Image (cartoon, rainbow, N blue to C red; front, side, top):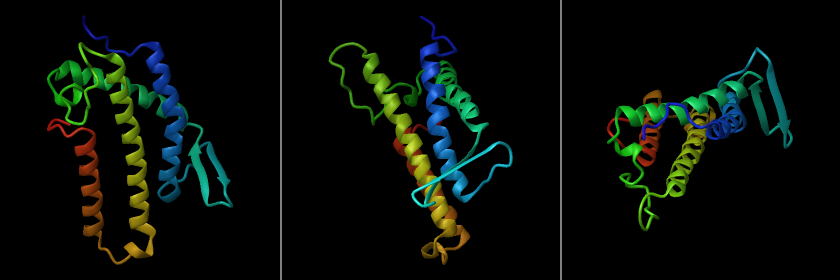
Length: 169
């Protein structure tokens, strides 16, 4: 049976909702150190201003669509174009623990991809925080630009190795 290009409406809804809710939170981490929005800004502060949500009303729907494309459409295109790629087959991925006794188990594969997506979002948020630390913290002040770029590159490579690790990634 041929895999359809578009995910089911249920999967699309889940991806869109995740992107529209979690995406602005990660975007807000990014904005605390790098960006401000001039168009339709949203700014909420709590805990005496230590934490804030800084994003735009445009971001939730845009990230909702982005999550559907990145999490639902592009993986399907990738698996159709490169069906033998290790990253497309959880059973071949060294970080996937087989919980199947016999035959395929859609639930275990769904959990694998869900956990990998959660790890990707979490580690990306941590990488954004690391970038902010390297740019603003006095402890990192003495590091040169080359050292900062090297640190960020190593962390990005580590993220790729842990979450995918395939040569074609």
